[in-house]
Amino acid sequence: MAAGAGSGAQFVDRVVLHVAAGSGGNGCASIHREKFKPLGGPDGANGGRGGSVVLVVDSNAASLLEYHRRPHRKASNGRPGQGGHRTGADGADVVLPVPDGTVVKEGDTILADLVGEGTRFVIARGGQGGLGNAALATAKRKAPGFALLGEPGEERDVVLELKSVADVALVGFPSAGKSSLIAALSAAKPKIADYPFTTLVPNLGVVSAGDTAFTVADVPGLIEGASEGRGLGLEFLRHIERSSTLAHVLDCATPEPGRDPVSDFEVIERELQAYDRVLGDRPLSDRPRIVVLNKVDVPDARDLAEMVRPEFEARGFKVFEVSAASHEGLRELSFAMAAMVEEHRASLPPAEPTRIVIRPEPVDGGADFEVKDLGDNTYLITGAKPVRWLRQTDFANEEAVGYLADRLARLGVENALTEAGASAGATVLIGTPDDSIVFDWEPEIAAGEATAGPRGTDRRLDGHR
Image (cartoon, rainbow, N blue to C red; front, side, top):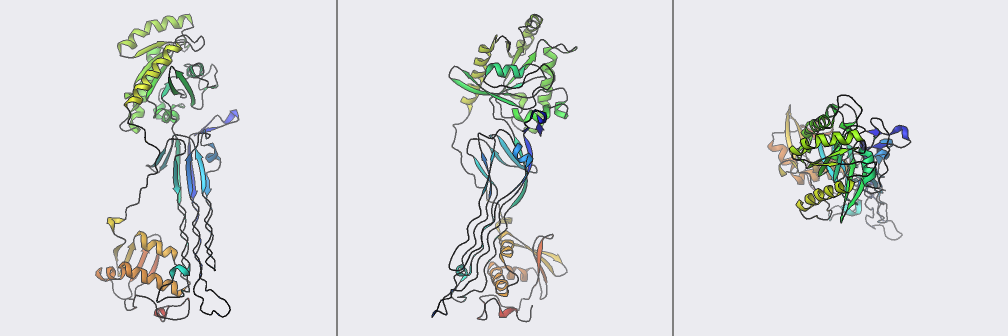
């Protein structure tokens, strides 16, 4: 969501980001050649790793505008290996700075909640480089005539949402005086004018009260129906999700007919409760709240504030009569906010240093692969290892294909097909039904190390090409 387009600068707090990591470089199939050394042996090196795409919390990043303008980001590929045991260079990572409080989503799943300067999250991991023939040499295959291909990098479409990290959120109708209040309480300089929706972006200010320093968020004005998409409020409600305290800023000098502080308060409360449905176990309506009766420098507004104050106090709220223009009551308000923030901070567990959390993806049932009977002598093989090995195989090289067959046999695929009832000539798909490579299964072809033959060939495949 972008705002402030007409002011020369934009604030964006939600973008769809398309990222692609770099692919790994291919391994090299090379034989050392030197005068008087005809059997120099394999010297093909491994390919380099592809670059990853990394998100990093940076205090200098204020919004997601850069990714609204350039939503496609790609890391560089790894370089292929070379002869002479020269390993290919790794691809450069793409590091994307994001504001503190950025949430990363893929569909309805939250991948990461990035809070704290320097917090990193690898959003797309680069592919591994392929092994060169020097790394593939064995006692029986001393000079492999093939190398493994590099793996492709991850590609993802994710949503970045910015949720401001503030201790106190100022909520209220448009032109209730929230911008003036945050300007008077802190060093923030928001845009201020006497018309609705002056604030098109959330403003953050740092307030000091005694020994306590805390942040206050000036959230753009809510109106009735904001939780259903009216006005600007729905787009900005996410910016108060992290706040421990809410301050209702009520306009006691509004010229609009039919409005008064009590009815304004009840409208905002209903909108907060309606937004609770997306917040799970920490709804906005359950958080500590105070009532700020603003603009009491106006004589009629002071009279109205004194009239409605007992009603809010009867509901159990602390009430403060303030004026952003004359600074009346601001000291008492700031110290009350500081006390509520300190109480919340004291209830939190001890802070832990930022840690990298590794979440390995589970393999189906803990197995390396699974064989599924699709009927009509057709079988589908799924699993991380078989699919990865397919991506590494150069199918234009017979020896590489034979090496793949050996790997699958050692994994147990041949036995699993037999147990599943496959017969000679069965159609075997490896991958997914929509993206797979098809083989004709010939159980009479013996698995194991290939017999000697010209490099790049496999005699077991003679007659089965």
